[in-house]
Picture 1 (cartoon, rainbow, N blue to C red):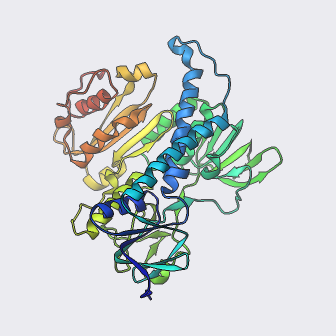
Picture 2 (picture 1 turned 45 degrees about the vertical axis):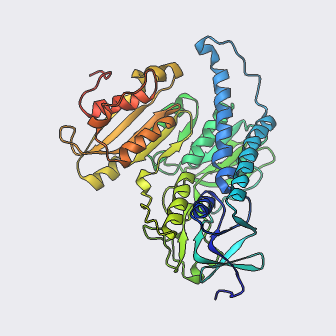
Picture 3 (picture 1 turned 60 degrees about the vertical axis):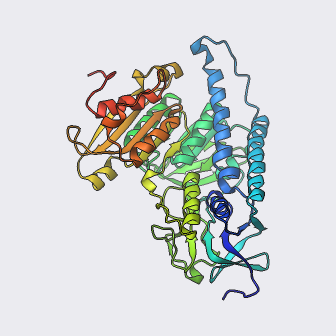
Length: 464
């Protein structure tokens, strides 16, 4: 039962990560009073233990790779070594500056922040720090997700999750990455660029299995050229730490010796022990069930971000938060469509995509057609010395096809093209329409234009 003496505001938000604070900011802009309850720091995993610190390390790794390969473009340079403490200072400085700016926005929006772990107690009420907080209009659940581990594999000094990997002050000489998803391949890319010998062990038939199979093949080929070993259809049965390393046992009987084992088998929603099920919020395989407008099964309670099944991405959480605030305000916003959420894996080379892969596109559209443009024909990509390509999927045939339903890209810096690709998919554009756009030369953006020309049947720089 709700406490009649509870502190009240229009909106109570449990969790201050990407989805939570975006909800708070937009609700404030719409004139609502907001109470935000957070057990750790505003900004959540993305700012403090995910997107930002990881991408800072990826940039540092890119610099190291550039120095190591400088002679290929006529620059004489020598990589003396990697100073991990200084790299961590660089990483932490970025996080600290962004956190300071975020807290300034919290104050600007006049958000009431309650520190402490909260628990949903029903009737649009959350209990935290021995007090109760009731949302007159709604409660928004935004408790995010945490690193998942595997039964029988205990974390320790040398068996770590991504949280600990971000704080390593030495580069491991040998690293085994358990899991070939986004987190796993990004850390594999970082460590390989910093000089480590890296092996990825993936139970599924391919790495980045949520992406188009064509992308998986492109990335695995690129990793092979970089000396990263990829073991697919392989499972880890155990891991034993020693004073000097860790033995990683594979189910086929082999043992891999390494300095560290990174357990990167995905993230699980933080939904247990928070009063959700006990007070009418239905869970479905740990995720909070919602309808297409992010309502839960409890009256006046919404859920956003990684708590809701689908792509676990910060920008999806942001958009969920904006949507929920506007929905509560009665603005009738358009629901967030997961297939329109852009996805980027910041490896070397990068993988970026939006829309459906071939399998999903066939299920949705019946007949489809595809076109692939190889970056070997793109001047800017040759200057950057990157390989890869762009794959476009449309509904129907090339001769009488419908709109673009998927764009999948592999290549260094290719993530910068995802904006135009997203517009093409979200606005259901025809390749013939985009083929008329003028793409600046020499840019990698031209490659997307060339892929659209090829799909429209009028390729310009494609060898037949």
